[in-house]
Length: 384
Length: 175
Image (cartoon, rainbow over all chains, first blue to last red):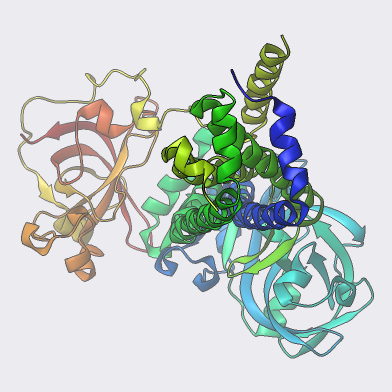
């Protein structure tokens, strides 16, 4: 026969300070798990949504896998358009986007300098970068830029500093912010976009970093590959955008592994903290537990009741931490080497956080309860 | 009754939580693993052609539109094959690839002799009767792989920059 459910719940209310402290400790640990898993999931999502499988990136063979280091001739887009039939073409406009992409020191209106990611584009860019949506303002004209939703985070400045009409300084020139854009969580959101020829003039460069091409279908990439293979003199490489970001995922694998390691460490520390608290709690209840045995309750029934107490506290902690994470942590933006991304409390994060929270409740209660029930009833009844 | 209801609810919630995950596992097969719709017989020859020209020599003497039979080793970059097309690059046999004892995981990229590859490489595309590249992975179609030695016959295409492409109609794979 099990102890009544209410017995365990009422026991928690008998020691409000102790229960409150345990609840606080469990909530903190579970919240930490949510933050770390949210970080990993945010990073993964940012890279996953950045790659369009129908977009092919053509850039320099010598730049390895870093587009920022790429330099190709400004004639390449025209050459590609003339040589390939694989690119989408509507109303006489080829859907390709010649781009100059670089990291540059950006000084904002509040005079705080930061390293920004700048992309010089032409008006055909939205035809290829299909996730990009202007959220406010207008497309940048000469001397103007438009900023991504997470550009302020990347620069480490408040969002208000990058309001439309404000000025920023980069490459020795002042630029006015004409608009803002979003890109469904893709890495473009941490970038600053401006007119390609404007950026080329400001940086005194005539080359390009890459050409992004929207292909008719996924099999059309072979044609682009063949072109790059045949034109050895151009030293080009073609990579599907989704594959490019998958490669970046591989680069960030150690970070993700480290993240999961932190989850494990925090969970382990939490379990030890829980064990410590439960040992303290049960040390003063040895006679009570012995009395329950005298009344006829089996050790298993008492054990289940003690675990139930831990579980109730852990469930409450998981709910509090989960609610806090979903309401206040989900969507928080963080700066990272490749730009910025939003923490993401998705189903996996909730599952991981709650699972660890509940595990803390069970594993924290089991050993002290087993220890308390191990000694004989007679000895326990005389315990001080 | 209350317990069974709670259990059912928990199981349902677990499945709903797992089901809400928006990560869609990709089930598409790589190009090389898809079944072939092209017959290799018209392109594959079983007797070794005579009068072959090494790639390096061909790059010096071959003119645009000229017929040629080239011999070479598949390689020249870490990915010498094009997925979805019967096309690849070959390197002159006189250029040594990375020795096995150097521990190079991709000896076919000739990373140890890259400066010599530039003047000894040719692009091969196996073409059909209409002159279009055969739309099948060459590895699967002809049973070849990186560092396979092949002899290909076809028509050369040269440009002002010195690039050499052979639109090949037949291929012989050296055993």
